[in-house]
Length: 225
Length: 244
Image 1 (spheres, rainbow over the protein chains, first blue to last red):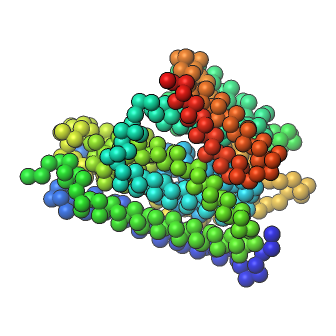
Image 2 (image 1 turned 135 degrees about the vertical axis):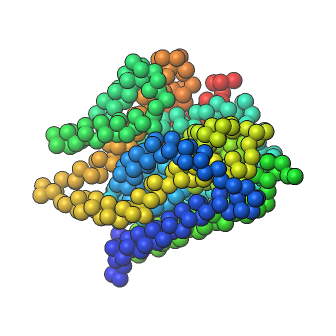
Image 3 (image 1 turned 180 degrees about the vertical axis):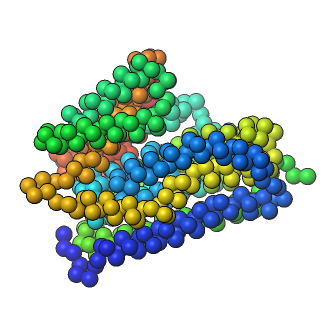
């Protein structure tokens, strides 16, 4: 690869941070402003007492999980992809696998400028495609609803995540069998002993990710990777 | 007097939602153009960048249909515009459905269009929005500092020329993520004899192996670009067939 002489990756990154901060700030104002505007337009009112009660219940769960996600996703995705992911959502089930697949195809290495470009491109594309699919879906909501909700197709959408993680597991486990064995066994044993854990994947993935990183570090130190 | 659902599906709401979504779409386009141009200036090959775009687009279609199902599911109680907005930005279906229900219960009502009012709707919408903004706030306040700190760590080269641990750490984290989901499906099969998810995992994994074999041994880039989307499609079709 031949680098252009005038191009400075640091300036690019700086502009991503500036644009990201401004974009996210405007986005948040618009998002928070929307319910107020809808209330104004429709002559309705926000029920503040109920609002604070419900918000208290929600933030107790979601503030810690949002902070942990922030700490985990930034090193995995890089700044450009993170600014986009945090405003468009669906990170674990869509943006992260999408960025990792693009990274695999482009053969870029995490933390490099090339990787930062690839993950940003990937997450931006993914966000736009999702918006487009939902837009077309909303336009065709009446003819599409019976098809999408048909009992015949239900197993397909019920098994979207197994299909996604089955394919990704093959890609990643195959190259790192030693590293994958323990977290996988740990998860199976834990869920068999305590079946309630089967539906706690969003919490357990943080613990299991930490186990995999710890194990990876040991193997790295011992030159087993 | 207009009914709740006719107000919740009214044109003004569509317009408000459209403004927000157009802004977010514009933000994505801006980042896409910036990163594409930077990639070219960095000396990356155009075909690598284009393949990153096409593989991401093809992969996203199927999960997006699943998100669309979420819009359909929520639109019965919250109306189409609010569901559309909520599932297009931040959050995810699990979050939106849970929080909408917590907010509705907090107001002594439930997610049912026959009992909800517009006052309930705007309150629920505000709870759903404020409840999930923390990742965005962290990004505005700390992302630059945090990513610079990470960059410093990654920049530290080992004397023996060995790659730093940070790149392994990302792969390890992702393996942990995959192991969590796959492990839960295996356990589900053992505990409750629910075999379809495990069957889907196996079909997806085998399809991926086949796509990778074809890409490597036949040298057809198409198989690599569409490997994830193709594997998912095959596995989901298999899930439908086995459930018939």
